[in-house]
Image 1 (tube, rainbow, N blue to C red):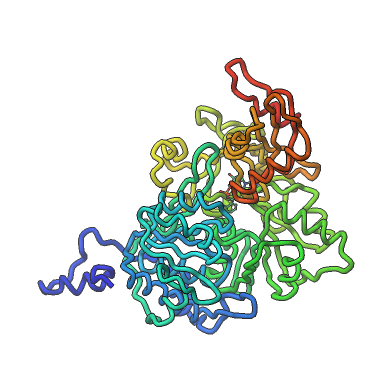
Image 2 (image 1 turned 45 degrees about the vertical axis):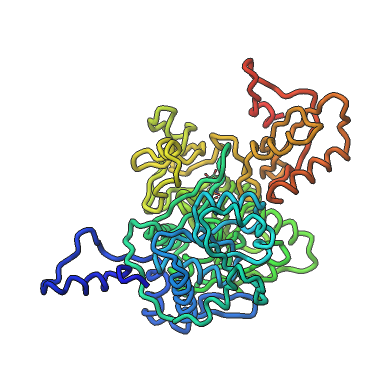
Amino acid sequence: MSEHDTYEALQIEIKGDDKVRELRGIGRQYNAASKFVDEKVESGLHDKVAIYYKEQTVTYKQLQEKMNQFGNALRQLGVEMEHRVLLVCHDRPEFFYSFFGAIKMGAVPIPVNTMMAPLDYEYFVNNSRARAVVIQDEVWNKISHLRDRFLYLKHVIVISESATTDSSVYDYHCLVSGQPTSLEPAHTETNDEAFWLYSSGSTGNPKGVIHLQHDMECAYNSFAKQVLAMNEHDVTFSASKLYFAYGMGNGMYFPLGAGGSTVLLEEKPTPENIYETIEKYRPTLFFGVATLYGALIDYAERAERQYDLSSLRLCVSAGEALPAPFIRKWKNLYNLEILDGIGSTEALHIYISNFPGDIREGSSGKVVPGYEAKVVNEVGVRVPPNEIGELLIKGDSITHGYWGLHEENKRKLLGEWLSTGDKYLMDDEGYFWYCGRSDDMIKVGGIWVSPIELENTMLRHEAVLEVAVVGVKQENDLEVPKAYVVLKDGYTPDEELKSELQSLLKQELAPYKYPRVFEFVKELPKTATGKIQRFKLRIS
Ligand code: 3UK
């Protein structure tokens, strides 16, 4: 450990001249890992279970020790304050250890989706200039051939069930097992970078969204405390994964902030394993995306028995608009409320939400305490109630900015306000109603899909002349991507060609992105200048 990493070390150094004075440029220490883990242990939560994972439990004390061991391992490897560490980890305890372990020693963890295509990881590693990556073995096996292309990456730490035999990488468990279980937190301050998350853009590459040390505490104090009224008896279960901003709050820093517990499901969520997990671990709060509630309702309506959700006191939906009928059906099935709320990676968590006992079906609800929201016209002036405009928000958990995207930062961060890219109207009573995106992005099951990325991939097929992808609403009001394809002369629009296109997409892109609906058309609607008129396709 470097002697300059702690405030104490710095103080000792200047004691030589007798007077101990504050060092200039060194402010009050604030470390998010100490806030969410160390302070909980000190407050007496020692033996309380923090994490339920398969048949294991992890207590707060064990979490602290494992976090410290990971932080020490990074230091031993030469990782320093402000170095980035990419985290490609499923929902399992190692996510907590490496995320908070990195933050505690001053490094900046960047959790990313574990389902991406190899070239997406090349982008994440190089764009973030990560020094180290912590990665699930099956993902590493898919990208290890790209290692020479990872310009700044020094260390690969692989999480696997059996110790890896590859000497060019570290085995996570071997690396941490001998490390000391105590660790002095780095002297970070509230406005230091704590972690990043990547968010997809409509045209270009994913954007690194920078979050500061105090952002998690802000989001906790606003949504978790004042909307959900979380307390130490709460046990959360999030179907949305920890590497999404939504899941990270739900399943990690909310329960820790409350001194409660979390249930982790490592596998891809399905109605079957969701119901099974709820019945087995009896959580009090459940978090999902609208698409999943739809699937859970369908599944329950066809099931031979009733599921026991009596442990739950509240359910939350975010990521995409929640159709009103889902709220009623869920209430009929389980006598439970679903709170729809809108959040974003940039805001870190939910800033407008329905409240327990105060639900407006089909609306996103009211502003969450700690945030402000306004609906404005093209020149940034607030519009009267019931008029549609662009939603701007303000609050302390909002991102410090996008990594390296100077122009984007100027467009999105308007003084204290963040432009969300969403169209909204606020009614007379202060409820906000979602009216669509201002860009072409599509949300599928709460996850971004860029139409441009799908179009560019399909254009590589020899039969494709033109293609446009748009989000279309299904009968249940949820959006899915639909591809309108114009073929070159001499090609026949048949099932075979359709499945060829689908397999090209599945091969090249993360599997969740492929268009659910295809339509072969003779031509696409265009403006006089030749620009595709997507809005016409959305309504056809
Ligand atoms: C859309 C919604 C209608 C909207 C997120 C909760 O979804 C989250 O973050 P992302 O960065 O996407 C943000 C965008 O998704 N959206 C989210 N929730 C709703 N649209 N109704 C909703 N309830 O376009 C928003 O700008 O992936 C959600 C907490 C943290 C999050 N990051």
